[in-house]
Image 1 (spheres, rainbow, N blue to C red):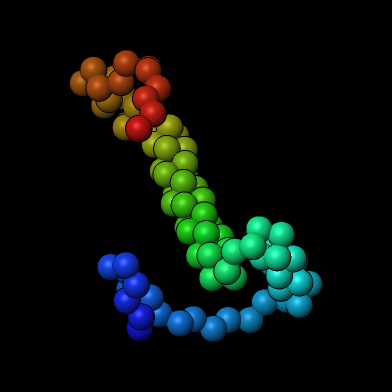
Image 2: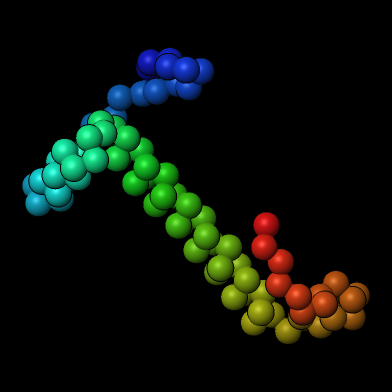
Length: 85
């Protein structure tokens, strides 16, 4: 495990389709950046997308739960406004 600029890194090996690897190599050449940067960014974005899906699923479940909706209305906890954080 390498330590660079206060971050810990570990070498990872995985398989990918040849066609995808060729596209990644073309992108690497076009952007003039290391493959590891492309992989790290892609995996980070994938994780963010999956976390967002979890939140969306939770909201959808809550919106289907009549007891939950009644409780937040009864307690005045839902003004109907949308907030972004």
